[in-house]
Structure formats: C-alpha cells, structure tokens
Image (cartoon, rainbow, N blue to C red; front, top):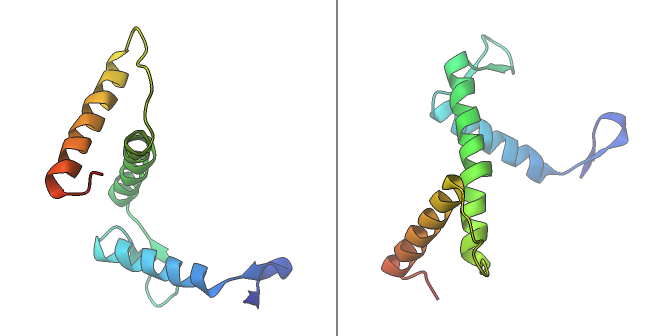
Length: 104
C-alpha cells in the first residue's frame, strides 16, 4: 500500500484494475491517448457506447443474474410488460445454463 492524496491508502490492485480497464477501452477504440501526455479522451460516440455498456450491465444483466440465483417466489397477480420480459429472459437464461451444463 502507498499513501495517496490527503493521506488516503491506495492499493496497487486499484492501479492494475484501472490500467486493465483503460487497455480494454483503448482496444475497443472508445478512448485514445492525448498527444504526448498521460491523459485520455473519448469522442461523443465512445461516451455513448460506454454509457450503453454501463446501463446494460446495471439494469439488465445484474437483475437477470440475481433472479437466476435466487428463487423468485410467488409471481404477482398482474405483471407489467417489463416484468414479463424479465421473466422470459430469466427462463431463457435458465434453459441456456441447462444446455451448456451450468444448471444445478
């Protein structure tokens, strides 16, 4: 560990993770190095793509995986269309896990 700004503790694992993330962004052409500096920039389309990845992970993938791991219990009497889509996606994900041999 080393001291960071204002005496905060920094772990080298955070530095490695940041370097890894930056390498992934550069590999996907979402960020590029500013001329002769340690700074990086992204154009508006790259920012839109990164936001889309983030929203997909936070709003779709995580809730789906949480529903796969936990039993959902008794379904509500009335499902709105978005809930029905989640149920369908969860069922398809379960069938996919069974097909590839990951289901218990």
